[in-house]
Length: 177
Image (cartoon, rainbow, N blue to C red; front, side, top):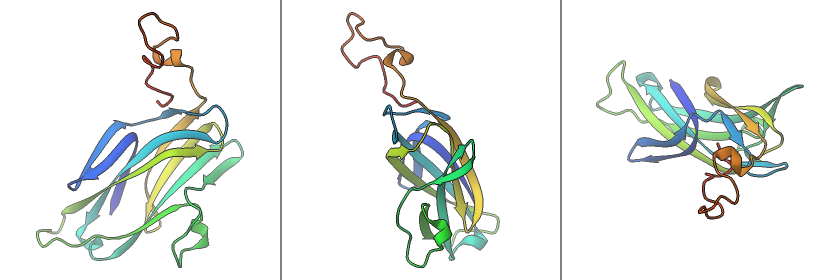
């Protein structure tokens, strides 16, 4: 079993396919000038499941970690744990899933399981480096890193306030990179 994760502006699953927009984010600008620093992001996750991993329940965890000057700190994504969960998983997003075996599956085949996890309005405690880690059954499959930057003025995006012929708010795509 394997999984790949991509940080993006938007992701959704439709018809068993993963649709991604604005993929590969590495630097984010906050939408707010002070903590909690708000960002709008999505995680696009593609699970790859082999024949031996089908018809068995799996546990996927998603963890957000701040890489601070004094070490790594888990940033809570939720304040609830599923019943019977390990208290060490506190703050992690947890999903249990069963990958059914297809009758067409042959040894060596991989079944894909796309997932989209929107995190609009996610509040981060400080500027700096972070990463999302995806684990399945306790083993890290992939991680994606990003740096949170301060809120950027509109001129950073190619627009300047008060430019003749430009309506207020046009010329800047917003505070998110």
